[in-house]
Image 1: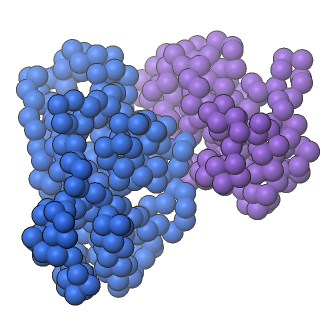
Image 2: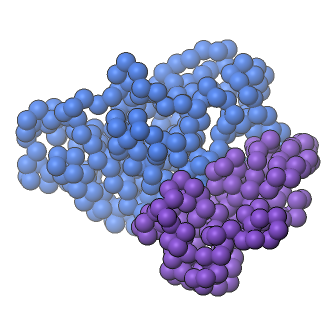
Image 3: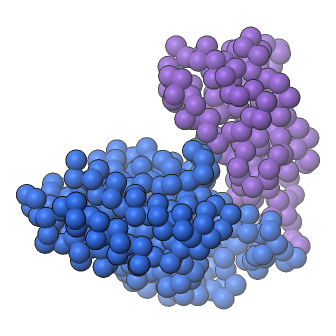
Amino acid sequence: MDNTEYLRPSNLKELGQIMAGHKNRATVIAGGTNLIPQMRNGGKSPELIVDIGDIQDFSFIMEDDGFISIGAATTIAEIASSDIVSTFSPILASSARELGNPLIRNRATIGGNLANASPCADTALPLLALDAVIRILSPGDKTRNVVLNNFFHGYRFTDLGKGEIITRIIFPKPDDETTGSQIKIGLRNAAAISVASIAVMLTMEGKICRKARIAAGSVAPIPMRVSRVEQLLENQEISATLLEQCKAIMKKEISPISDIRGSAEYRSYVTAVILERNIQRALS
Amino acid sequence: MKKYTIHLTVNGEKHTLEVYPNALLLNVIREDIGLTGTKYACGTGQCGACTVEVNGEPVLGCMTLAVAVDGAEIKTIEGLAQPDGTLDPLQEAFLDTNAVQCGFCTSGMILIGKDLLNKNPSPSESEIRNHIKGNLCRCTGYNGITRAILKCSK
């Protein structure tokens, strides 16, 4: 923290110039709610903080042509109270309403929640279940898209290269046959860091599940899709027996650790419980 | 480390300040501006004692860089009463319902309560409890606080 500098570009052009010149030393923030605790613990001392919180182009929630787009610097509070999000992706709305507390939500942003790449990132789970894509701005004004499922490479390690910034998150509007549910287990009702959480999206054709998306948080180094459980559900009728199989496979696919919030055994157990509960809720 | 010049309007009064890039809004309000009604408690965004309003929205002073809110309108607990000292109805209600014991959470509680009443003039008890979730009180058990906000619910 000896020589930290701070820049707050007010538009994309200024941002582009800063990132082109300082891509090796820039730490990007929007609300700063991830960086501040990291700096206070002494763990992180950025050379240059680039604050994108003022760039209007990064703050929007749009519905168009079958897709929902959310700007990276859109606050969690804006997502939690957005009619578009509540209508087309209630699981994202409810996970936004459970992130931190109302005060944190006024500063924290969706792009920051993903870029921070915590295994317990609350918005990552519904976005994984919604097949979200991340749009990234690279130095030299190039943009590229990454499927969120390929964005998390390891513990707090993402696909973002030097000088790259998330600009928006895009996901397809679910059709009428698709329903979802998400459950977060925390130690308290506010400001809880999840002990385990799951988001589910199911596309049904009568009693048959045609497409399943299952995402689990706080039970692996990254927020993860659980493909083997998805495959087990797809093109099957969801019966009690199948659910038991899913729960057993779920426990094998995750790799929870024990920490101050819960033991690995508890996480494994509760993940199976909330998987079943989510599927039942999505179907009801 | 380099200092940065920022402009803040706090409770209607303009301030020009020189701050380090890592200075927290909380510390700038308490130490540079000298308004100590905003409290420093956990310092990690868990308790809400440092709640202040930035451009109309309540945020945590300990989770906000002062440089990041350059140009903002800020309201602290000191800005709630009328200039002649007449208390805000919610402040009166806190007194009437014994919502204050040690008082450390009170400034944050009143600001988050005002925020709720601004957004929803007639909140129910459960809406109140949901909105004050991020503000901890270790004395009152929240009953007096909830009653105070409920008293101002239309």
